[in-house]
Picture 1 (cartoon, helix red, strand yellow):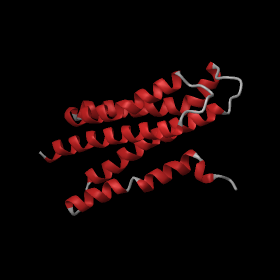
Picture 2 (cartoon, helix red, strand yellow):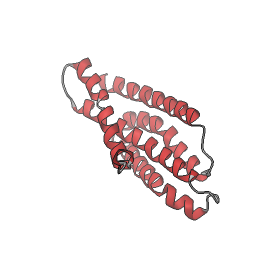
Picture 3 (cartoon, one colour):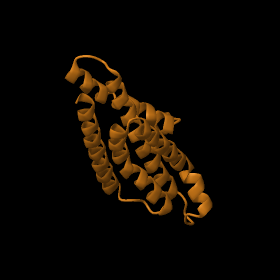
Picture 4 (cartoon, one colour):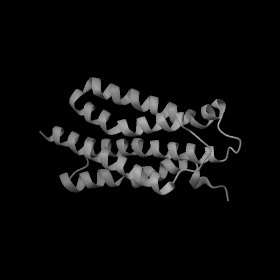
Length: 157
């Protein structure tokens, strides 16, 4: 078996499908498909894409038996770091064009951006407690969702 479902693109496709619940909820609430609904979908795909890259980096680091060198850190974390730099640039751009909404997006994405940086810096070849990782990721998701709800309240005002 080729394990296509475990590639980054396969996991992003799965996230894109699962994240369709955000626009579906917006359609149920408003009665129509809007740009806001599609924006929610995109934001959740971006948010969860971060988690995929982070967890993949941590799992691949475990396979390094002799410890993590700086070269390993670059190799294993380059996708994660590039992704978060691009994400941060886009959030700042949104903050510049729409300051009030951008503030909530910046605050919403901040924990996963900080997690990515700290995780990359502290990367080791020991397996993290996956239950703890899952719990923390759930807390980040709740935080992000609350920030989006506050942003949506501003839009509707």
